[in-house]
Length: 104
Image 1 (cartoon, rainbow, N blue to C red):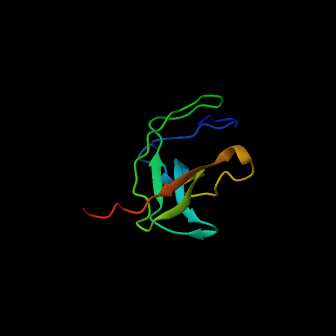
Image 2: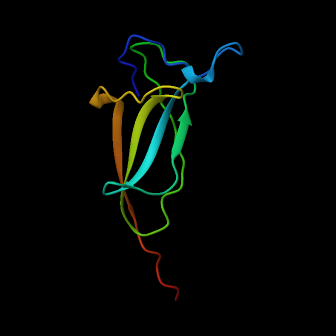
């Protein structure tokens, strides 16, 4: 992800500061318009300066029921709003959960 804004995305805060300033990557499982499955939240590995990029690795559990899903990602500040004013702040990954193979 790339910070195209003008403020630092903090990964950690000083003890005297509020955690509300932290920036995280949040994933939500969708089936159509319906939210399903557990929310996924990933902390940044380091502070991200304006113009800088950061790469994150995510692991999580897909919903149990077979079907087509979208994992919708957003950058957000823990105590604030999602960065939704720009389409660049959102991303989506299509996931197909296959039915288990029948036992032989």
